[in-house]
Image 1: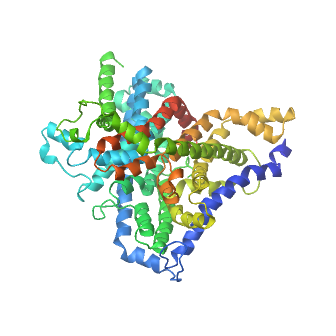
Image 2: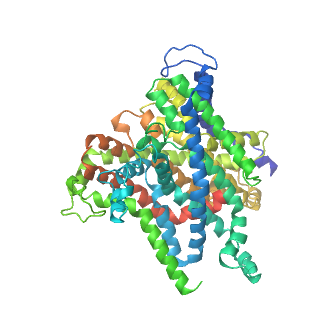
Length: 296
Length: 274
């Protein structure tokens, strides 16, 4: 028995290809990124001078954009946690109560935006929010709220909130699905026992469902923070960080620094700090939610 | 729950579903309009004459078929590699006994936390030096590397729930380790594997930023490019732009409709228990 599970050759064959691929396209690049971050490089492959921590000191102490991008990510993460997730939990509970065929249909429908390509989502929302032909402003007109009409993504005072709205819309289905799956794992007896004790309706869910969902919630909060930090494509394809820097995010910033501003070394320094922030965020949200169930 | 509560809930869900789907309905609706119909004041509009020409433009000038085939090829290879690597890694991490398994497991899990965008810049330099930019491999490799950590995570969670007795009896019957993994364990992990397949599919099929960084040759481009290329070429012809967006969305929706049930099952089995 042990002989089979100790089979060195098999272990090597099972582990080596995966680790090799992961190292070559994930770990080695990060090390290389670290190397570039100490250099004054304009583009990959161009000769460069070693400048020590200059990129980092510039980033941390003189670059307000970096901090703004970080702040936006935190705001987005909080938006996910305090707006998207409570809504998702509410809908998961309601779906579960609904039962039957309808439960399945609605679950299917709510997830559809999650399978649409980010390019389509971005271009679609740009059009929906277009000041001249977009449906959103027309809707406001129809509702007699024409005075609210706005270039939602074009105005720095509303762009970030609008972005948050788009991202919540787009990601809602995933949150719902996870909480829904978590709910399905709660045995019915729990509810029966609680209703015998006199709990019902909203109270029943607050007392039973939410605590029992807590392992799922913990994982989801961590994932929400990481998702917010990683946010890039939708922003890149709609506002590209603007107007001003109102929707700036780290990934968008580093991409533009590398490929538009020709500050490749500097962009790599952002990259490294980006990784540090992500690891830190994971660690902190695991700590804060005092999870023992999560492994990442 | 009483009948009336159920009805209220039904109506409420119907309303939310409409709100949730409205952007897509609007997109489909306007894809049949001619551009001058866009500016009328109505929110949704019955086309005076459905503009099939928009879809012809989308198909032909969006190079839909070419990009579709590229996407299908890249995604299929990525999924196959991801499934095999996640299964073997997952098995080695949960069942096999070796010294550094927790170290390697942690390393692989780093892939879930580290954003792919952080690997974008160095990979661009490396791929350029190796001549991997503008090749299928230039996308398949990073796509697989990104998918394997989540796949491994889902599979380790699932494998832990499979009783070891199965393998023990297989060993008694004289099966070797490869037979056990590929003929006994693999079929048992099917629900988790489907989740891996579907999440990998969704991630790769719709991925844009790596594709746009690593590809410049038109013959290799993937489906999201049909939308991107089009936006410039038909900058004022919104009807055709919308048609190409509808066309691009259809394959993913079809795949989703087919695997919908398995996605939920897979999430329950894998990610939640994990």
